Each structure stands twice: as C-alpha cells, then as structure tokens.
Amino acid sequence: MRMKRTLSAALLLSLLIVGAPLAAVYSDGGDAPKKEKDNIKIENAETQSDAELSIRLLAGEEVRELSADEYLVGVVAAEMPASFEEEALKAQAVAARTYLRRYIEEGSRHEGADICADANCCQAYLPQDRLRENWGDKYDAYIKKIRKAVSATDGEYLEYDGKAALAAFHSSSAGQTESSADVWGEVPYLVSVSSPEKAEAVPNFVSTLTQSELDFRDTLLHLKPEADFTGPADTWIGETQYTEGGRVGSIVIGGVSFTGAEIRQLFSLRSTAFEIAKTEGGFSFTVTGYGHGVGMSQYGANTMAKEGSTYREILAHYYPGTTLISPKK
Image 1 (tube, rainbow, N blue to C red):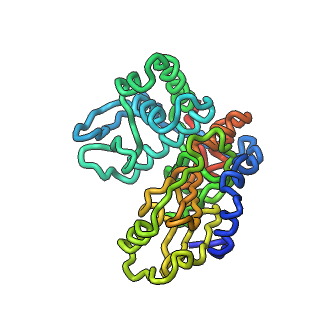
Image 2 (image 1 turned 120 degrees about the vertical axis):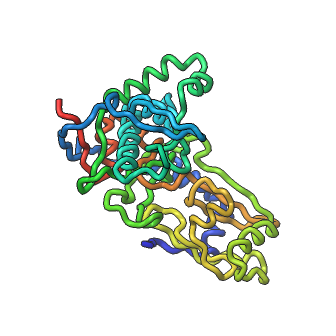
Image 3 (image 1 turned 30 degrees about the horizontal axis):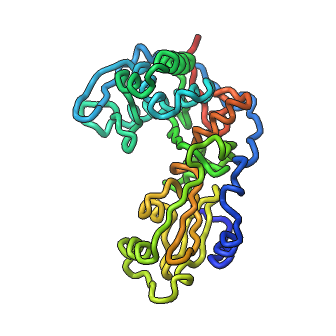
C-alpha cells in the first residue's frame, strides 16, 4: 500500500484542539481540475443499443427480464440525485452501463441472473413504482431527465485493454479521490485525482462521531485484542499514515496498527478521510466525504458539470487512460 505524509498524534491533536476544523481545510472542495477538452480516447464500434440488449435482474428473490435502457434508468435514478446536472447524469449513465457490461463479460455471480439490484453487491436499482413514490409530483420531470441522459449516451461504455473498465464511483471526496492501489489493489486508470466538490453543496460533507473511552477501547479490542490500553487515554493514539488521496491508510492505536478501512468499518464512519481527537472522557471522529473514494466522485462530477464540463470530460478526468466505446453512427 502506498503511503504519503506522516503526522504524529500529538501534532494532530494540537491542531484540532486549537480549532482548525477539517471543514476549513476542505471548504472549497480543493482546486477545480483543469478542463479535459474531450481528452478521452473515443473508439467507434458496432455495439448493441440499450433497447436491444435484454438482461436478467435479480431483485430480492425474483428474477425479472428487462431491456438495458429500462435497467439503466432505474440505476441512474437510484445512484445519483435526479436534481444533478444533465452532464453529470450522462457520466453516471456511462459508468452504470460499463458496470453492467463488465458483469456480463466476467460472468454473473448470480444463478439465473446477469446482475442484482443490491448496491452492496452490484448496483442499486429502483423500479418505476418506487421512483413515483420517492419523487412525488417531480416524477414526470425527473424521469424524463434521466431517460434523456441514458438515451444520449446509448451504448457507450468505458474500456481498458480490450475489456469493460471497472467504473467505480462514490458519493463525495475530500478534495482528492483515492487510488485503487490504496483500497483494493492497483488498477491503472483508478488513480488519485483532484475532485472539486464544495462542502456547502454536499449533504453531511463533514460528519462527527463521539465515543466514550470505554466504548472506543472495547470496539478496537473486539478486532485486535492484543492492543494495549493500560496507559492514559491521551497516549493511546500513535502515528497516522496517509494515502496519496489524503485518507487514513493506517493508524497506530494502543500500540497496534489498524488500517483506515478497519477503523471505518468498526465505527461505521462515512469514509476513511477521518481525524481522531481526544476529548474530555472520550474521543471524537471528524469525517469528510462519503464512500470508498475510488473512481468518479458524484458530487465532484456535478460540480464539473456546473462549471461547463461535458460528460466526456468528466469521464476523462476520473478514469484517465480509458477508451470511450461509442456506437457507429
């Protein structure tokens, strides 16, 4: 795992104690990325239109057959706010189509189905009745907008080295996306890039969690019982190492090293972009962004769209080195 920047716990605690909130560091979302003027390789190929491709979707215990365009509308609607800019929705449609194609290429993990509707396994998907319920009187406008995004990118997907790319995406980053090498293993096009989302535009961009000393200790001991918490609580936290994307790669607590991912899972944090401060009687987490941080940031994509980037420029920025496969006209 590649790590950059080391910060002692004492310095980290002093910064937090004197009132340098994490929100101040990321309040403007970081520098906006330089515009990639269609800086993505485009290859025209014979590909099926979404309407021509039939897929089998596992939703709960039921397998239903539907066209790819109907499926993608349900995915984009479930994965990205319909209020987002059209170019951001188009980028999400391409990412979702790429995800689908990759699953089909690699062979489904679901017997009798190509893909499922569980976001923890494949991609989230919402049927029309749920969308009507969720959107209420905005349904007609929103469904038209999302169908337009799917139709405008009909058949387009990202490819790398002759295969559908791993088009990972997440909700929001802390000014920089995470390299896949620091999360799952190296993927050439899933590298750390700047991400321009603005704190004020992202719900719960900065979140906090407070734990008593007892709960903090017991939660960590559950995973690593060899950790030593016999000393004063203000000595429990040691060195923190950060990834290229600025998230916690590892942190020493109780003399034992935990990965950022382990801490995130143990305390149900929104991301691994967190800092820990000693408080009176306990510890406080300050967390920035939401998700694993790899690939396209959805709120970053929306900011880029608002600033005039096309969906192809967004894809070029978040998936550098990939090729956009586009149907021959």
